[in-house]
Length: 64
Image (cartoon, rainbow, N blue to C red; front, top):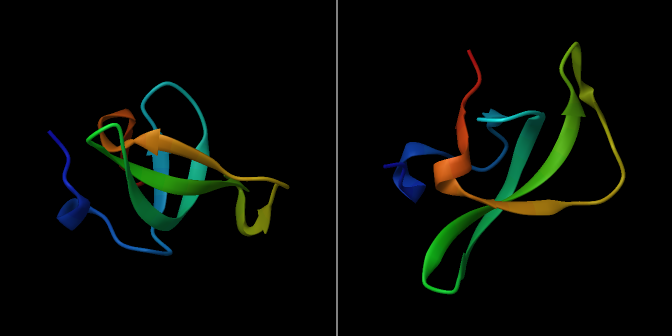
């Protein structure tokens, strides 16, 4: 199980189902740890999409 200490702000991560994101921060919702994310272009991480979303840490993994 992922914990906040497994990730850091500005880290590029991958959704376990889909997407590539940059971590903007962390929050707790309903007692579960979430990462606040912004979608990035997988081919150019400097290009982001508008808007943000939060996913539980169990739904993301390191981008290798």
